[in-house]
Amino acid sequence: MSETKFTPGPWVISNSGSAYMEGTIILTSDGYREIAGVWQDEDAHLIAAAPELYEALNDLLNDCINFDGGKLTDIFMVKASRALAKARGEV
Image (cartoon, rainbow, N blue to C red; front, side, top):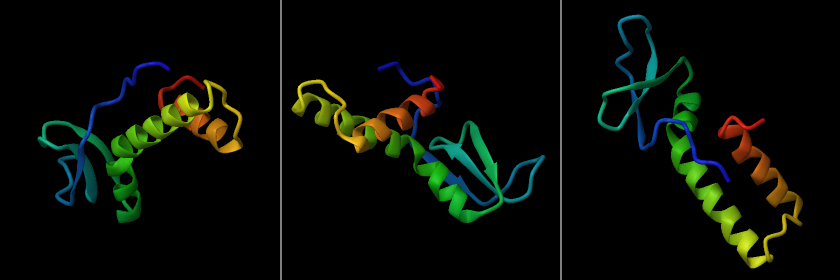
C-alpha cells in the first residue's frame, strides 16, 4: 500500500475561526496549520478524527490480510481497502 500524503495527525478542533472564515476550523495539534474549515460541528469531529480513523482501518485491514494469507476475500476487507485507497488519492 502507498504512503499517505496528507498532513499527519493528530488534528484538533478550534472554534475561533480564521481571518477569512467564521466557524469551526481543524488544525494540526500544534496549531500551526489549518486543515479545513467547516460549518457543522458534526463534520468537524469527523474530519478531526480522520488521521486516527485512517490508521485504525489500515492496521485492521493489514491484520486481516495477514490472517487470511494475503487475500482480500471478505466484502468488508474490499470496502476497507477501497476507502483507504480513496484517502490516499489512488482512485
